[in-house]
Length: 267
Image 1 (cartoon, helix red, strand yellow):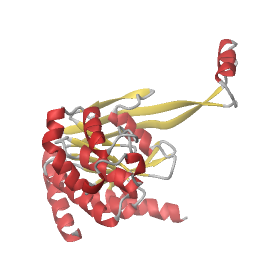
Image 2 (cartoon, one colour):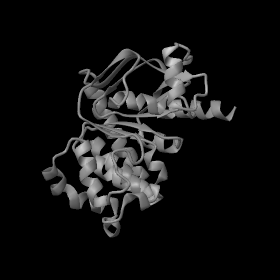
Image 3 (spheres, helix red, strand yellow):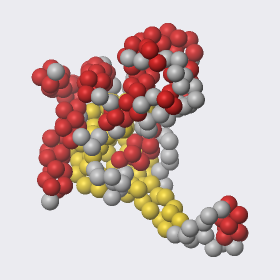
Image 4 (tube, helix red, strand yellow):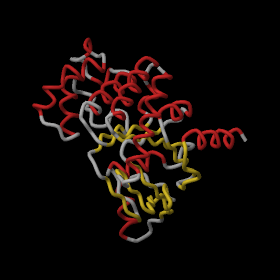
């Protein structure tokens, strides 16, 4: 599998070089900063919160999850985002997905986005897998007719035939990941965003997901991929952004950035 993946990756890179010359940008991020207000006080109830709010005694500490982040992603490229916990990886993906708005800066998305940001997002634990397939499809903007046409394909890929009528609150995290990935990738999205969701799956399903991502990339789909597995990032991605405390520490070729990241982490 690795040999085939490498050869396909090289062909995609050749295509990207041609496309990049025409400046075919799918994601344009300019000086993005994200600020959160962290309370310095312990407030036990809503009444106390409003009393302090009225008296203007609420004290917050500014925390910047991202600081002046800029980069461009071209059509068909695969970008990995690495960094230690709390470095801003998931926050960056949420900004790109439109889940949160930046405090400063601008972002431009040129294409439809299929986000896999949080495990179980868009699912209702009390509903069955069958019901959640249609629910999640509606959340992603698909019609009931579209979901009916692709229902069997979704179930087959997720390998959950025997558990279709069980509430997903009884599912393992790996089973939820299978269902979420299957629903999100059934559509012909132009940008696929994956955030650590595959870390809970078994090896065979990870390989299956990587194969589907490879097929999507060969069709020109752009990929943003967050993972703590550096080997996965090297194998899947062309380029990598290394975030450290909300700032870009390094950006460039996947192997070069990952190798430097490992060196620093070992110190």
